[in-house]
Length: 183
Image (cartoon, rainbow, N blue to C red; front, side, top):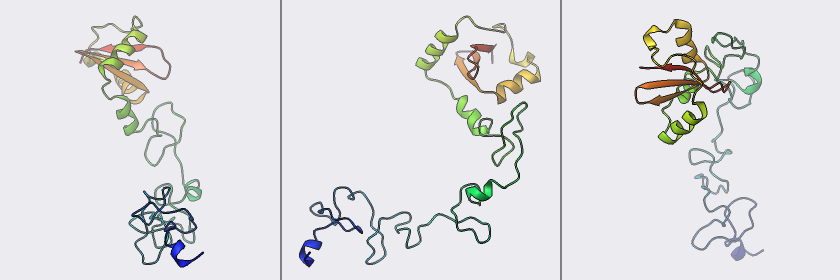
């Protein structure tokens, strides 16, 4: 291979494809960044540089371990040896994930399940659950005991908002509405 022909090959190490006119990269590499270190022919991994020039993930904090971080400040191997505790949610047997609760009962998961559905989603759910109301429609949230409110806050419920009525649906057991409230 002559020096002239190598100038028309892709910039990246080991790639022998012809460059796209007006660039230093071939069709398959045209969207990849080039490491900013002079004469480096590697793809950018993070921060404008390749892995060889420092774009590595942070390392495990355990002395002598060179594995990448996975959980908190330790690698997956060392995270498995951290002390564990059960989820704080009553009746849950899962392990907590760096907080007092498991992933299913985390605040983020609860908030994601309680987002207001679109009107189409609401109509579809109403068709699915029509006629399966356990409590009286006139039940007021103020009159509910603490156990029911705790179940709404912690269990896997979908909340359907229709004008001034809230329907709480037990999505895990597919029992239909287990509670109908007026806010």
